[in-house]
Image 1 (cartoon, rainbow, N blue to C red):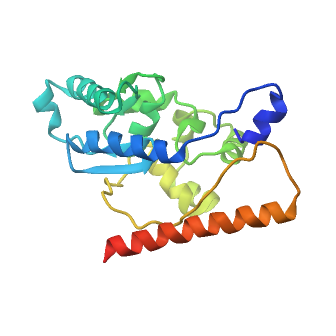
Image 2 (spheres, rainbow, N blue to C red):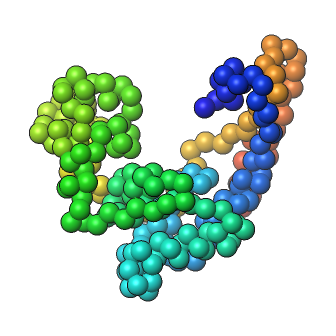
Length: 227
């Protein structure tokens, strides 16, 4: 939750300043550990990634062995950090599986298990289905993926547009997206959290200028690296 909300809920709490540079450093170690298994790695966020594990199971005595090896490599590279891993035939299912046995857990979903797994899955567990979509689907009497499967692709597209078509594919266990090893950056940002809320405009202007300088320096660094 936002820090400001946490402070309101817990005014006596002790809030430790974040160390974003340290987070980035450890994130790079994690990604390097993942790339030691395969170069086909898509970093989705600072602490999340997708791997194309096709064929790797034979090297590690099956998917279970591969998952254990990956977790061990991350623990060694970071000095003890744990992680949760989901293994599945397609990306969105792997994302769902990675959340099932947190923290420090794993969940393996095989192709022949997909239909039964999805049948009772709450629709809100599908990545991209937010609270408003859940409410809309509940208005149709839909609470599980199995119930949503009753509706045709044409109906889904008419009601929810392009996203309805994507959702139709996902409730049937399909996801055509591959692993993107490179992607263009869409944004650059800088942030910090104040110890106390403030309306001091001069202070805020100074902080805004400092953030602008940080973003500018980062953009210039990336541009020089691309040359």
